[in-house]
Length: 66
Image (cartoon, rainbow, N blue to C red):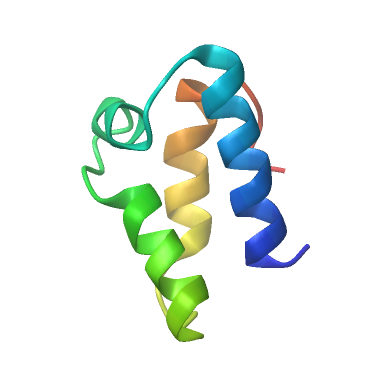
């Protein structure tokens, strides 16, 4: 799955749960997680450890990292 698709799914979960991207990132103990994912997509730079970020965000978004 492409990182852009993952961000669409993250946005969908945020809306469903009534959370902001910042609040979800803070709850995942990675304050800039979603912002950094969006920057990576925009710049085409995918070097960051997105798996670790997704694993941290998944419980907050009430989903799995898969």
